[in-house]
Length: 235
Image (cartoon, rainbow, N blue to C red; front, side, top):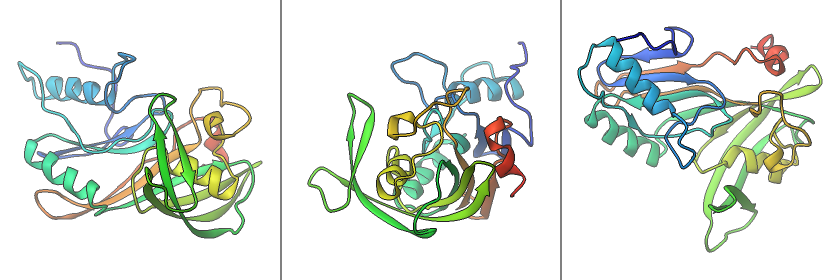
């Protein structure tokens, strides 16, 4: 069995025990398979575990939450069905604290605040629209944000989503503040990034271990991409 050349501990593998595998997902990688047929994070994780533990069959990998394909950062995978059930409940009930970093082309006004919208997803176009007041088909979305400061010719924002809706941070920053994320042409930024990622990174996740009940904090290093260089010096 050839060793899969995909991850190393401390960079991509942030944490592993009997129940959890926590990955710093690179931008461009799906978390779970879709109609494209591209190999997702979940399959790569199963391959990694199968090699590491010399499993003759498939390794169990459960997906409890997702971040968008062009987004990088913390993803928690379950290695047991018990952990998956409890993680699903925790993410459904928002029983964790999520921190994202985003680069925008201009500073938000005001520099700190809370955004609340009702989001309606268009599954055909794979886009989400944000409404400032209650919408009959909408799901309530809430986040708080704060400007960390200028980062070269961009601006670094820290974002804490309270809810976990599809494209939530992307559409709320673009609609609520008029500050689309760098590279996110889907939501109004003028040009893509060279690697076709967007400058949004799931930086930190704090949660209670679904089995041991230990309080855990996972911190994902920023990608090596050039557009993050100035932000990296600020952390």
